[in-house]
Length: 277
Image (cartoon, rainbow, N blue to C red; front, side):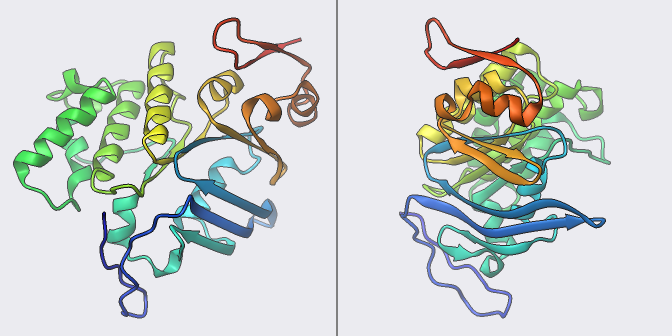
């Protein structure tokens, strides 16, 4: 059983982290206003262990803002708890062991090799260098970047960089035990079709192993194929939160995206397929 002590902002020690509940993230009455515009309006959402949730919605509807609010990158009104403990009670170094974030884009000002970039994810891990090297190699294999290990980071394509940073985040979570949250902001935006599917299949596998996985996606069909649950946002509010089959109705999609679609069942996999009408 994984356990550790985490520090609160007041300097006191929080209770030993030994969380076993199904709900890993609780968001209550979340609101975000930026430059006088309401981006998120009274969001209430629970995220669960072993579940892959896709956040969908039109551009500018608050999907990425929701992730950034959860990590503290954007100031928000509301309450957050992670693994049953208020977020503000988590020390940053402890939080980093359990919450991994893949942003839309990542930049580096140093000319690292690809392998050195992934190794940055191991800075807070407590293991020998030999053990860390094995973890780095495994995560680079899982994200199909092991062949890029000695390439200079600036020479990589956008998709290669995206997969490389995913390997870094997975390395960061290596010691999270049974409590890990993986937040992916448009993880397939720069990927070819093969790597779109392999990346989301990996996310699906991690969820099946007990991780809480949340991904901002734009492709409704990719979400329907890989996610266990779809949370559909529009104008800063949740309009649908259900399984892909129930969440992706033609009526809801028309209302949210202002576009007519037809919904059919995939001939072999059975998930809903959205076709522009």
